[in-house]
Length: 366
Image (cartoon, rainbow, N blue to C red; front, side):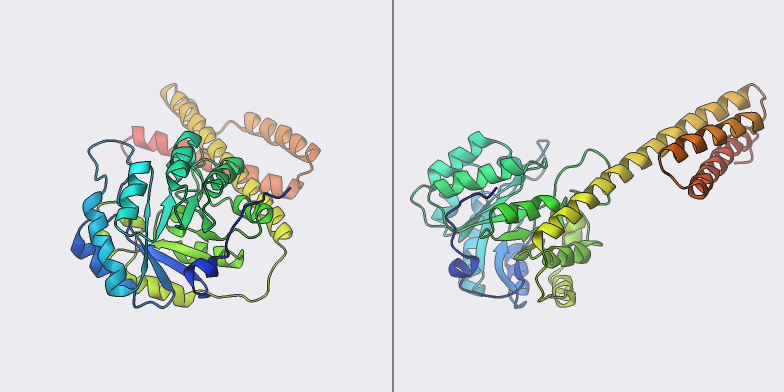
């Protein structure tokens, strides 16, 4: 299945073939000095062509910093004149769009929380009719490819031909190493269905920290994404929003310089299937870890019960029955006997250790 969108190639509306394209700037515009100092620094990095900053910040609870609003647009409007960088801000309502256009913002982006609501998307599409401006659409918070495609279609049907998608990861109900699980198979499938659509990766929101930014950025480029949106702050430690995932301009340059640009193109269907399988493994690993954690909680309850009733920790008959039963079940499921025995021994050793710790704790040794 393919989706037909009337799209202009990225290089036609950016007037550049730079690879990879980097969109960078702070999570939030906080002050004129912070915005301009950051912009001046990132403008010195050749791959950075677009300056981003959050003007209206959707916060879960009131009372937190919700952005500088119109005042922030005044600051950003100075950046293009001084640095030559294009500018982009997030819009979530028709009023945001009108204000951004008034202050000469070059590119709009629509955030993940807005994309989940077709009514909000249609309101934005309506106000964009007849406007010649690029629009980037982030994936919805939840992993719903059709919702993402629907948002792109609504914007395209409003007459916007300069359009791109931004992959910023997805909320996953279990704990993962990332703030938002990348689920690479979804943007890969998006590219398969809409081959001409530029896809930009937002590793800052996928990672949620600085440590894994480089790995996710490299992965995105290896999967033939067209560029990266990376949050950069002149003083990230004191940022008013998401300080842990923003990096300095100097760190940004180091990251970009470390990336490997591969020339050989892969098979997108192969990569899609591979990432689909890997994502299933990630989900199963998360379930496995949760199950082990719940098992250990039950072990603690058993340990406390034994301790309070002066029962010995090791129950050899019970353990022998467990090993026999689990081995039979595992062998019937196709698991290797030696692997399963080692796994059971590791789990049992940890269980005994946890119960022993409970006994020592009661006796005042811990």
